[in-house]
Amino acid sequence: MSTLNPNRFAGPAEAALLRDDIAADEAARAALRERAKRAQTALHDANEAVRAAQEAAASAQQSVDHITQLEHIVDERLAVSRGLLHPIRRLPDELLAMIFTLRPIFYSMSRPVPCLPFALAAVCRRWRRVALSTPALWATLSCSIKDFHDIEAERSYASYLRYYLVRSSNIPLSISVDYEAENRAAHGPLWLAISELYRRAQTFYFSSAYHCDTTSLLESVLSYRAPHLEDLELHNTEFADDNEDTLLRLRPDTPRLETFECQGSPLMWLIGAPLCPSVRTVVLNTVKFDVSHMVELFRHFPNIDSLDANVFHELSSPGPVVIRADYLETLRIRLSYGVKDIALAQSFSFPSLREAYVEMGDVGELHADATSTFIRSAFATVTILHFKDHVADGTCSGLRSCPRLEDLWLTCYEFKHDAEDTITALSAPGPNGAWMCPQLQTLTLSVWKTNDRLVEKVTALATARRMNAPSGPPSALETLNVKFRGDSWRAHPPSLQLQEHLDTILQSV
Image (cartoon, rainbow, N blue to C red; front, top):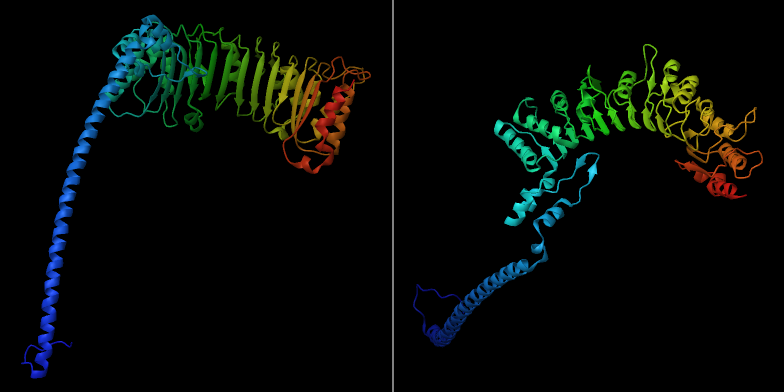
């Protein structure tokens, strides 16, 4: 039906149609009202059901919460009851204290890893009482001191350090301090506490960050007497790299010191500094370590038997000098520029030296006579000699003065010059019938590039020095290792089976 126009009166024909429509609409309206009543009833029932479900859910949640609370109460009661029956509660305080102090501790030199005695003291009142009355538990301190900006923060660090001093009674301490704070006065509370720790220390590790110049403060600490100190390790490498003229001036009073390690600032021994005859092991990685430092080192540590050192500058001396260490047995030294001065090369005297591990960086500028003299002077008594970087010209000549050598390691980029000369000289007796390095038992050749000459020479060496070889040396060669550091050997068929071939030769009788 079209839209009705309400602004007119219907005609006779139209009125009949309108009456039929009105009757149909009234019937539809009655049906819709009935449906609305049913929908309202359904909505009411649904709302009632929702309210009932919500009430049931709330009641169930209250039941769950109550049961959970009861469960927690039971769990706590069980934990307490089982704890009261735990065998550890039957241990006497003395055994409990022993367990506390048998915690695993690992050291890097004198640097301990903390075991946090405060955590043990926080378990219960009994553990706290035992922990606080067990000095050995507080004998290991590892502390990282961050930057602070007021005296209260500094006093807080100092109080923490002194707490270990008090609780540890009078037993020697293992101290590790990583210092990353701005400088404070040497007479401030923090550095006074560090000084007290040092005086009680058996092992003392100190490391400072790159922006911290702690040199003068550390000198003040190290000036005190440390009667129990056995291991001393100092690090300020990052600061020293940019400030190589800043010296660490030492006057140690450490009658029991055995191990000394310094990385960073070069050392300067003050006039009147006492000798340290108890020191046996020294590790130095300072930005400067020249001839004068070496002489002073051996003078102040007269009984040193192991030295590990880096020499970053060219060694030189304005006049005659003697570099002597009567008891040195093991030497690891990295010489960035080798030893170029012949007069200096003959100044070394290590009559007890048995092991030497040498790295020489810039060997291209070394004079053969200087290298040969250096080897004869420093390494004449060794049984183990490893050239871990490059074989310099003059090495072959120098090795003729090493009659006790049993283990030799040679490193080269290409098999030529002195590396080849050395292998050749080792393969046959000299004109006087004497073998070079007659006691040699192990030889390792580390090379980047291989070639036919290398295969030929090392094969001849293995054949000449194998067990029961005709006119062989007094001691047969037992091991000959060829280590290829590059990939050139993969494309060189004779090198593929070289090691197996050498082993076969040496094992044949």
